[in-house]
Image (cartoon, rainbow, N blue to C red):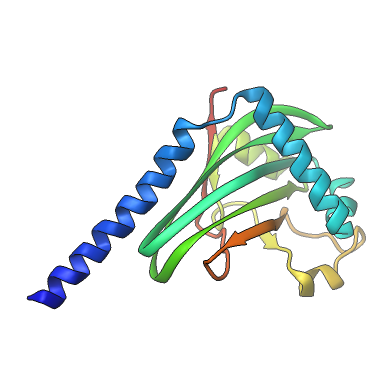
Amino acid sequence: MFHTRRKFMGLAVALTAAGSIASANMANAATAEELNQQAEMALESLYATNPVAKEISGEAEAVLVFPNIVKAGLVFGGAYGEGVMKEDGEVVDYYNSVTGSWGLQAGAQSYGYAVFLMNDEAVGHVKETHGWELGVGPTVVVVDEGVAKNLSTSTLRDDAYAFVFDQQGLMAGVSIEGTKITQIKR
Protein backbone atom coordinates (compact mmCIF):
# COMPACT_ATOMS: atom_id res chain seq x y z
CA MET A 1 0.00 0.00 0.00
CA PHE A 2 2.74 2.46 0.98
CA HIS A 3 4.75 1.56 -2.15
CA THR A 4 1.72 2.19 -4.40
CA ARG A 5 1.00 5.50 -2.69
CA ARG A 6 4.64 6.56 -3.14
CA LYS A 7 4.49 5.71 -6.86
CA PHE A 8 1.28 7.70 -7.23
CA MET A 9 2.77 10.67 -5.39
CA GLY A 10 5.90 10.51 -7.60
CA LEU A 11 3.68 10.50 -10.69
CA ALA A 12 1.70 13.47 -9.39
CA VAL A 13 4.92 15.40 -8.64
CA ALA A 14 6.31 14.67 -12.13
CA LEU A 15 3.10 15.70 -13.87
CA THR A 16 2.85 18.83 -11.73
CA ALA A 17 6.49 19.75 -12.45
CA ALA A 18 6.11 19.24 -16.20
CA GLY A 19 2.79 21.10 -16.24
CA SER A 20 4.21 23.93 -14.15
CA ILE A 21 7.13 24.39 -16.51
CA ALA A 22 4.87 24.41 -19.56
CA SER A 23 2.47 26.82 -17.83
CA ALA A 24 5.31 29.09 -16.72
CA ASN A 25 6.76 29.10 -20.22
CA MET A 26 3.39 29.94 -21.76
CA ALA A 27 2.76 32.67 -19.17
CA ASN A 28 6.20 34.15 -19.83
CA ALA A 29 5.96 33.72 -23.59
CA ALA A 30 8.12 36.15 -25.47
CA THR A 31 6.67 38.76 -27.77
CA ALA A 32 7.22 38.21 -31.49
CA GLU A 33 10.05 40.74 -31.48
CA GLU A 34 11.75 39.11 -28.47
CA LEU A 35 11.40 35.65 -30.02
CA ASN A 36 12.88 36.92 -33.30
CA GLN A 37 15.88 38.35 -31.42
CA GLN A 38 16.35 35.19 -29.31
CA ALA A 39 16.24 33.02 -32.44
CA GLU A 40 18.81 35.19 -34.21
CA MET A 41 21.14 35.13 -31.19
CA ALA A 42 20.73 31.34 -30.89
CA LEU A 43 21.66 30.83 -34.54
CA GLU A 44 24.69 33.11 -34.22
CA SER A 45 25.82 31.13 -31.16
CA LEU A 46 25.27 27.81 -32.96
CA TYR A 47 27.22 28.98 -36.03
CA ALA A 48 30.09 30.23 -33.86
CA THR A 49 30.46 26.85 -32.13
CA ASN A 50 29.53 24.54 -35.01
CA PRO A 51 30.88 25.35 -38.48
CA VAL A 52 28.93 22.44 -40.02
CA ALA A 53 25.65 24.12 -38.98
CA LYS A 54 26.78 27.35 -40.65
CA GLU A 55 27.68 25.44 -43.82
CA ILE A 56 24.33 23.61 -43.90
CA SER A 57 22.44 26.87 -43.35
CA GLY A 58 23.69 28.10 -46.73
CA GLU A 59 22.02 25.13 -48.44
CA ALA A 60 18.78 25.04 -46.42
CA GLU A 61 15.45 26.26 -47.78
CA ALA A 62 14.31 27.22 -44.26
CA VAL A 63 15.25 26.77 -40.61
CA LEU A 64 13.11 26.19 -37.53
CA VAL A 65 14.84 27.70 -34.49
CA PHE A 66 13.79 27.01 -30.91
CA PRO A 67 16.16 29.07 -28.75
CA ASN A 68 14.95 27.85 -25.34
CA ILE A 69 13.23 24.56 -24.60
CA VAL A 70 12.64 23.71 -20.93
CA LYS A 71 12.33 20.05 -19.99
CA ALA A 72 11.48 18.56 -16.59
CA GLY A 73 10.49 15.14 -15.41
CA LEU A 74 10.28 12.56 -12.71
CA VAL A 75 9.26 9.32 -14.44
CA PHE A 76 6.83 11.36 -16.61
CA GLY A 77 8.19 14.50 -18.19
CA GLY A 78 7.51 17.26 -20.62
CA ALA A 79 9.32 19.90 -22.62
CA TYR A 80 8.05 23.16 -24.09
CA GLY A 81 9.43 26.13 -26.00
CA GLU A 82 8.60 28.54 -28.79
CA GLY A 83 10.49 29.34 -31.96
CA VAL A 84 10.44 30.71 -35.46
CA MET A 85 10.67 29.54 -39.04
CA LYS A 86 13.08 31.59 -41.12
CA GLU A 87 13.32 31.65 -44.90
CA ASP A 88 15.95 33.75 -46.68
CA GLY A 89 16.97 35.20 -43.31
CA GLU A 90 13.46 36.49 -42.53
CA VAL A 91 10.97 35.17 -39.95
CA VAL A 92 7.90 33.82 -41.75
CA ASP A 93 6.03 31.96 -38.97
CA TYR A 94 6.00 31.05 -35.30
CA TYR A 95 5.85 27.56 -33.77
CA ASN A 96 5.87 25.82 -30.42
CA SER A 97 7.69 22.62 -29.57
CA VAL A 98 6.04 20.14 -27.18
CA THR A 99 7.40 16.79 -26.06
CA GLY A 100 6.03 14.29 -23.57
CA SER A 101 8.05 11.39 -22.23
CA TRP A 102 8.05 8.66 -19.64
CA GLY A 103 10.60 6.26 -18.28
CA LEU A 104 13.70 6.49 -16.13
CA GLN A 105 14.18 10.26 -15.81
CA ALA A 106 14.52 12.84 -13.09
CA GLY A 107 15.55 16.46 -13.18
CA ALA A 108 15.25 19.55 -15.33
CA GLN A 109 17.20 21.06 -18.18
CA SER A 110 17.05 23.65 -20.88
CA TYR A 111 18.40 23.53 -24.41
CA GLY A 112 17.78 24.94 -27.85
CA TYR A 113 17.58 23.30 -31.23
CA ALA A 114 17.52 24.22 -34.89
CA VAL A 115 16.14 22.12 -37.73
CA PHE A 116 17.45 22.97 -41.19
CA LEU A 117 14.84 22.08 -43.83
CA MET A 118 16.76 21.17 -46.96
CA ASN A 119 14.09 21.00 -49.65
CA ASP A 120 10.75 22.47 -50.70
CA GLU A 121 8.93 19.25 -49.76
CA ALA A 122 10.07 19.47 -46.13
CA VAL A 123 9.16 23.17 -45.91
CA GLY A 124 5.81 22.46 -47.59
CA HIS A 125 5.06 19.63 -45.14
CA VAL A 126 5.57 21.91 -42.14
CA LYS A 127 3.49 24.71 -43.65
CA GLU A 128 0.65 22.56 -45.03
CA THR A 129 0.18 20.55 -41.84
CA HIS A 130 0.66 23.67 -39.68
CA GLY A 131 3.14 21.61 -37.73
CA TRP A 132 5.16 18.46 -37.67
CA GLU A 133 5.81 15.46 -35.46
CA LEU A 134 9.52 14.77 -35.71
CA GLY A 135 10.01 11.18 -36.77
CA VAL A 136 6.91 11.26 -39.01
CA GLY A 137 7.08 12.74 -42.48
CA PRO A 138 10.33 14.28 -43.72
CA THR A 139 13.50 12.48 -42.64
CA VAL A 140 15.41 14.26 -39.86
CA VAL A 141 19.04 13.54 -39.00
CA VAL A 142 20.12 14.72 -35.55
CA VAL A 143 23.66 15.96 -36.01
CA ASP A 144 26.06 15.05 -33.22
CA GLU A 145 29.86 15.08 -33.26
CA GLY A 146 30.07 11.74 -35.09
CA VAL A 147 27.61 12.74 -37.82
CA ALA A 148 29.20 16.19 -38.17
CA LYS A 149 32.62 14.68 -38.98
CA ASN A 150 31.20 13.04 -42.11
CA LEU A 151 28.83 15.79 -43.19
CA SER A 152 29.43 18.43 -45.83
CA THR A 153 27.33 20.26 -48.40
CA SER A 154 28.25 17.60 -50.96
CA THR A 155 26.89 14.77 -48.74
CA LEU A 156 23.56 16.35 -47.78
CA ARG A 157 20.86 13.90 -48.84
CA ASP A 158 18.19 14.02 -46.13
CA ASP A 159 15.14 16.28 -45.78
CA ALA A 160 16.25 17.95 -42.55
CA TYR A 161 19.19 18.21 -40.16
CA ALA A 162 18.72 19.05 -36.48
CA PHE A 163 21.29 20.51 -34.09
CA VAL A 164 20.73 20.55 -30.32
CA PHE A 165 22.70 23.27 -28.52
CA ASP A 166 23.15 25.09 -25.20
CA GLN A 167 22.18 22.05 -23.13
CA GLN A 168 22.13 22.96 -19.43
CA GLY A 169 20.71 21.21 -16.41
CA LEU A 170 20.66 18.01 -14.45
CA MET A 171 19.04 15.66 -16.95
CA ALA A 172 21.08 13.35 -19.15
CA GLY A 173 20.54 13.30 -22.91
CA VAL A 174 18.15 15.14 -25.16
CA SER A 175 15.94 13.46 -27.72
CA ILE A 176 13.76 15.45 -30.08
CA GLU A 177 12.15 12.45 -31.78
CA GLY A 178 8.40 12.49 -31.18
CA THR A 179 8.43 16.25 -30.59
CA LYS A 180 5.34 17.96 -31.94
CA ILE A 181 5.99 21.28 -33.65
CA THR A 182 2.79 23.31 -34.10
CA GLN A 183 2.19 26.66 -35.76
CA ILE A 184 1.10 29.41 -33.36
CA LYS A 185 -0.14 32.96 -33.77
CA ARG A 186 2.10 35.85 -32.79
